[in-house]
Picture 1: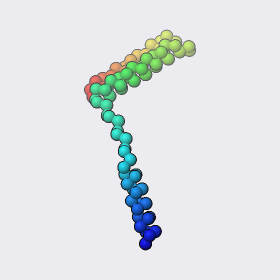
Picture 2: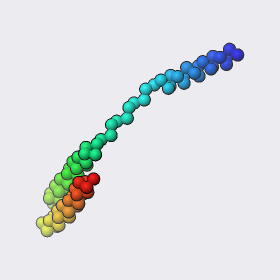
Picture 3: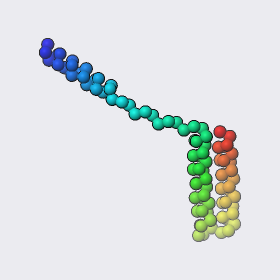
Picture 4: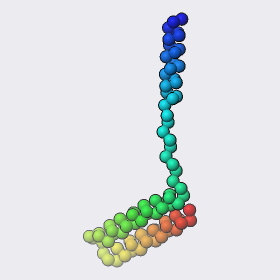
Length: 86
């Protein structure tokens, strides 16, 4: 009987200790405009990196670079349009 009493108290004490621990609050969700702004900044950063890589390519001819830049600009414009529609 004594062992049952001690084990019951131990079990209740441990379960209270676990439930008493505070759970961290979840991080706040960004607003729609903040989300769009961060996505826009990431898009601009990626665009500038790709543009720099195209312009500094040692082997590509001038015509190839122009075609690649044209395709990159079209892709960038379409992605910007999609962001604005959100």
